[in-house]
Image (cartoon, rainbow, N blue to C red; front, side, top):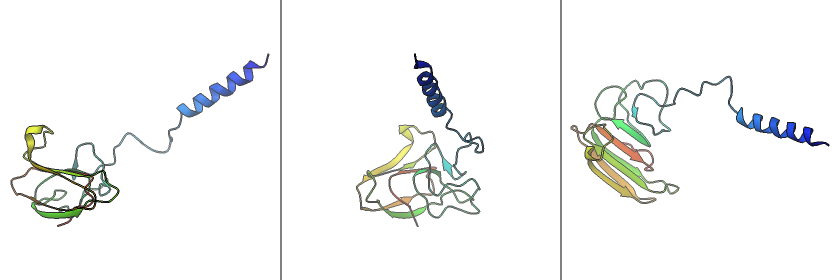
Length: 135
């Protein structure tokens, strides 16, 4: 009977697939900077806090204000990327994540230009699939 080598090979393969982590990398720390609130990831997110206000930002939920690491109130524009499923944004009266926190929201299609004005009274701004917002 030659089943033992097959069983051992199968067990080694299963064990190898289960142990795919890298011992040199700490994967327990999320890669989101302090400017971003919530679980979304952003290409602009980093592990170091920004030196001043955020002037360009992508997908995520951001706190509004004039301090370091915050998105200042103002008018921002973007063009929805052609590889996006669509753009969705929300202006927020608080960062609770609840439906009642939404002041205004919109959806936009691929390739559309989008302009939004974030008021000084807004507490947050959430964006998904819209590309990079710039003043």
